[in-house]
Image (cartoon, rainbow, N blue to C red; front, side, top):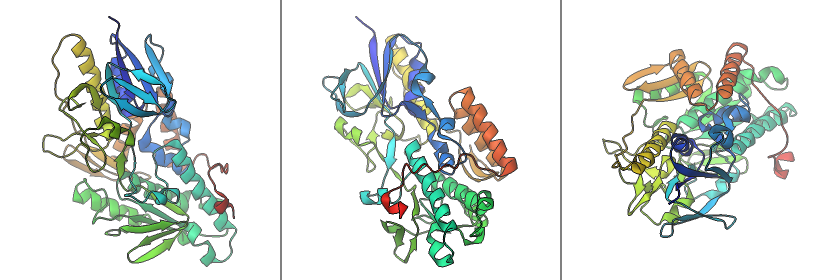
Length: 421
């Protein structure tokens, strides 16, 4: 009998964590991903705001895994899962059989049934998304530089971030630093006082899920940085260069979506129970009902903690679940019984800007410079590869002391004909 074959769909935190834990196990491993790289998504907003380059937060999956007999990394998109015959089917038509299947396909932004909004308000889930947002920001500043009439250039100096979660808060803070400080020395036509940044949240507070005191601290810090925080303001429509609410509109081509996620549509092919966002309900060992060899982890899994609350869609959850499954598969090969997965919450944090952050670590609440130091160390620690850690650390220190940003090139790669006019 040959080695057991473990197929891992997704090269994100969960998939890579499981693969690394299985690297020394007596199994064959196939990793399938639509991209050839692992992406550190929590820092995508820094690429979008020209603080970091894509290579600082993305590493080829093959480079992470190294050379190993029985390991394959395939560039492809899984479109169907056959639970009865134990194989996955790629978009190319290729079928790959498995003994164990670990599904870690990540998530996509949820536009709540308004898919046409996506072209006007991109999210931040890929390097391509980040570069698109970066080019929109830079192109707007360039257009504003050419307009003498303050009224005409107002839309190009206006930035709207929709969604008050960690990504939205971090993005709004980063844009405020760019347009109100970092890049002002590059432009002569307009001043920082003409720029407007809005953070729009449909509920009564930003950073939902954080303690109220930290949420309020984050709101006040953003407003001190020049960000207007609009609470209880659901979006009603998004068109080209305009976002509408029940009480008014804001005209701008710079609309960024960070308002909720939905699970991968691939999960529908499992034909098992899903929650309203598409996450799959999993057993205590992260397997799906009636199929103990198929597991779902990370943003794709609906798993509750000891208090009955769903686990958050955060990197630490996916990493711990990946390690758990790596151990489970190895132990099962040695005849051991399965354990139940338990998430160890080590805290949540969000950065707001230069030397500004909030953190809730096991009941201890921090804000300001100390929270930013904790955030920086944790995020650098999670980066895969020493080269990336060292480079990001140097980049951050350079930005901290000089207030200068990184690459600010416009390649015209993402601009549309409408943008060029």
